Length: 228
Ligand SMILES: Nc1ncnc2c1ncn2[C@@H]1O[C@H](COP(=O)(O)OP(=O)(O)OP(=O)(O)O)[C@@H](O)[C@H]1O
Ligand SMILES: [Mg+2]
Image (cartoon, rainbow, N blue to C red; front, side, top):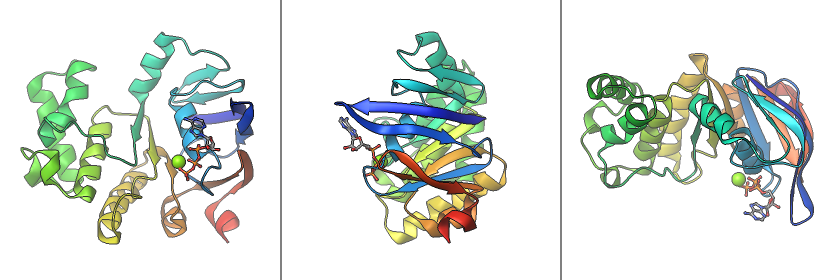
C-alpha cells in the first residue's frame, strides 16, 4: 500500500527530505513523529502528490510517483484512493454536515443523492455524529468538525488515509474523541499514515513508527522499539 524509496525534496536549495525510505510501512498504521520542521507534513504531502520531489520514488495505493512533475491523470486516480485529513478541518462552511460528506461521492464518484446520503449517514453514525447531519459546521465543536472531516474523507472509500496532526487544534477531551475514531479505523484494517506528537496514541494505534529528524529517517520500527 505504501512504499517510499530514497525520496529527496529540496526547498530553496535545502534538503527538507533527505533520502527518506520507509521500510515497514506497507500496510497497517504508520505513525510519523519528529520535531517541528523535520519534514513530516512535507512527506505526507508527497504521498498525496501535493508536492513534487527531486529524486527517489514512492508508491501509494498502487500508484507510483517519481521525481519531477506528476502527470495530472496519475494525480486524479491517486487522490481518489488516498484520503487526507488536515490540522484545520477545512469543511465547507456553507454546506450542512451531511452535504459536506456527500459532495465528493456525488461529484467525483457520481453516486446518486440517495446512495451518497445513505452512506454519509452511516459514516456520521460511525464517528458519533448521527444527530448532526443537518447542522452547519460552525455550530459544531472542533472535535466534532474533525470527525466530520474524517467521515468526509472516508466517504470516498480511500485505500489509504493520511492524517496531519489531526488533533493539534483540539483540547484534551476533543482530542480523545477524535483519537478514538482513528483507533477504531485502525482496528477495522484501514491503512493509514498519521503525523502525531502523541506517543501514547502512536503506541496504541500504530504498527510502525517512523521518526524524522532534519529531513532524515532517524529511526523506524515497531512502536516499542522506536518509542521506548
Ligand atoms: N511552503 C514552504 N516554503 C518553504 N519552506 C517550507 C515550506 N513549508 C515547509 N517548509 C520548510 O520545510 C521543512 C519541513 O517542514 P514541514 O512542514 O514538513 O515540517 P513538520 O515536520 O511538518 O513540522 P511541524 O511539526 O511544525 O508541522 C522546514 O524546514 C520548513 O521550514
Ligand atoms: Mg507539519
